[in-house]
Image (cartoon, rainbow, N blue to C red; front, side, top):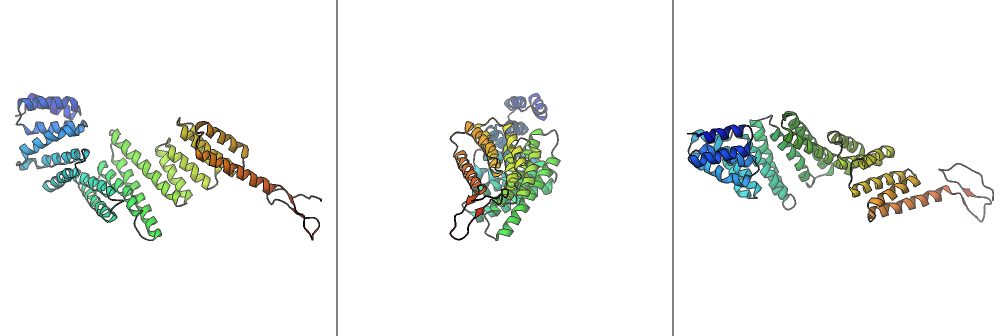
Length: 375
């Protein structure tokens, strides 16, 4: 029978007061050590209280006491699911996988175990990505099947939707290593990014407003996925699409410095230098990191150089030096600036040619005003 300590523990657990609940269940077990449910609740208190190592003994004890009870199969499967996650935090991968496999075998309707087994396979696929591409692809395929199984059982679960979004995002890394024609690879990468973004948005839509922690995780990963998709366009020199994708990321995180910088870079590549400087300058209003400030001034200097605004370029470089005096990139930009100034001076200065056949000759810069000069 349940004692008063157990009942008080359940009440505290339902209110997510896991620390208080844990103390009640420990007292309940001390009074009646044969009540399996007290161990089950105690294990969950440790698990959700981020004490996963301590969760293992009570979860195992619950399974031991209830493993022959067919009426408890759902809870036993859930205990195995929790155990698998505990073992993963200890890098006991074989034990974790065995727990997930047991959970899905004894209770195939347990969506959480399918999802966690899919995430486990994804982690393993990442591990083999460099050394064994074939095995990595096989593990990615398995991960996809397990996560889809979880979604078949619970189609609007934001955690499972988030898992599938993560799968598509990570699968991009595998696609980038596949030996196919470049056009097909790029098409598949774009498709995977779009699927990832779509599922992140579905996860966000399905997530309760009250679940602030999960919403923040989904929102953060959606933002980073958009940023990575922007990098993909940028690296492929599609600067307009890169700009649009970066802007979508910035709308979710208005102070994302990397995205702000990349919007400026994409605009610079399109020769929209004034707009680019707006984003580089915005970085100066947000960060206090010296290197980030120096990089922003360096990029501002570069845009002024490209517009032949020499004094403004020199001023921005001087500002950059104040924050990173040893930065080699600043020295390189100084060289480029001096070379550009010299080249512009050479082009804009009329040069007299002394020929041996024609009398008066003159080259006038095509960029300068026409003039007549007598020798």
